[in-house]
Length: 287
Image (cartoon, rainbow, N blue to C red; front, side, top):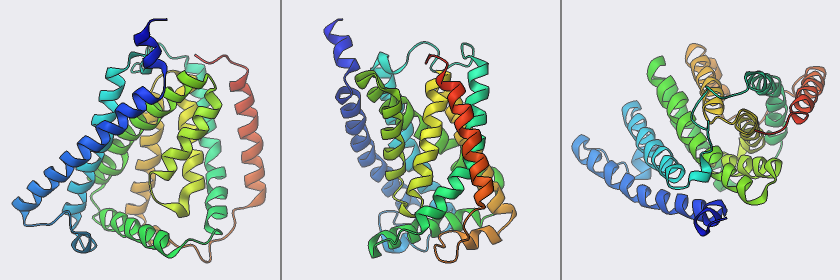
């Protein structure tokens, strides 16, 4: 193995590159937001004023953040390190459609488990600082969804995060760890935990980590980053559209008190179905 390939396979090279690019483009994002704020007479860098920001202000902030902190650093890192993009990574032409069907079904039957984990997570008390962060994020989401503009909501909350987050968490972090450890399941677990942690929404840490792992398995078994991107988009977009169409769902956002426990029998069926489908995937070699 050449020295170049050896370095490319070590996780700290692409991961350090990713972190460096995120820091660089974070600074550039601050500059972009500052310039846009000057044009629109808005201070994007003032947290106090952003607590009561308009819908358009939140849209601009989210777009700049996702493009400059996720999409650009993730895409550049994958471009720099060839071992992060084996043949077929950005194509659906070479995927095993039977595996794609199984991982898609695994994702669907995993959704009731997400509900159970949400209930479990909500039983864990949060510190005052965590609650404040959670509340701030939820208020921004409520403002954005309250616009009623479904195409814009689908674009900002569905498409853009699906592209950027999959490039970073599956395309760079998960693939780097897998190349280094040769332990794909551990890599998927760690990438899922980082994916959830980076959202800074601790009342949903466990379900989001599980979702991250489902997306990780979609990438691992399909061999194409497009598969988890599509699943991620469908999940986010469906949730967002449902909250726009049924505004009463927004009132439940962030509530941790009187949340009912999911039906135990539905959860048991979901776990059994999940275990069966997962066992079928385990019988197939990784791509």
